[in-house]
Length: 224
Image (tube, rainbow, N blue to C red; front, side, top):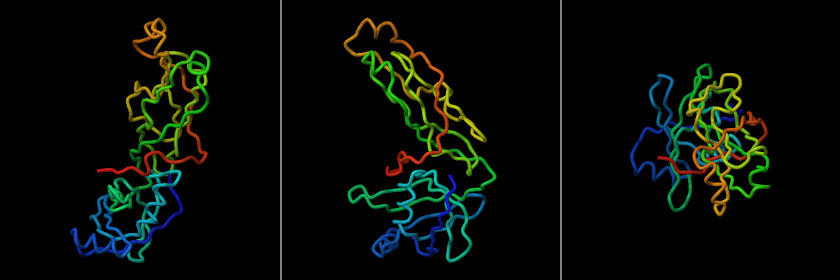
């Protein structure tokens, strides 16, 4: 999702571990910008500004402007990042230039809504199988998350990726048969479990893109 955010960056002529260490001591961190057919550019940025974006409601799917050495900002997205394994501070990011006219691949979080009847009445277990769904979409139309209503899910019923209601330029890239969430029978109910042990019955999803603000999924993980 496009946000009205501009992060300043400074060209980084020197490379290597020593230079990266020097930058971090000074309160900055190394980053690289690439994509859209242009040469990669090594820069230094303020890790606090990028970390704030990663922890925002749109997380790593946020498209923001990067202004290098005072030049006009160009839209970018964080596609890879690294945290210190002990201290937890952000150490490096890869930034992809974004062409706002071309669809891009993104993984969108799945949020659940409601209480399943299979859990509430029959004592089943609600299992989340996939917390994100990969789609292709125009940059300005990236949803914050998908909402799936699980209220009507009974025992051995589930919702698959293909049941999501996609809109505008969205195109599903994840396998349509991928299970997002399902309700399994109580472990101590052998007869119920045996009756539906094969494949969960799929119920048409009520979920759709939700524009309400919500915490981003995966924004504070370490990649690479």
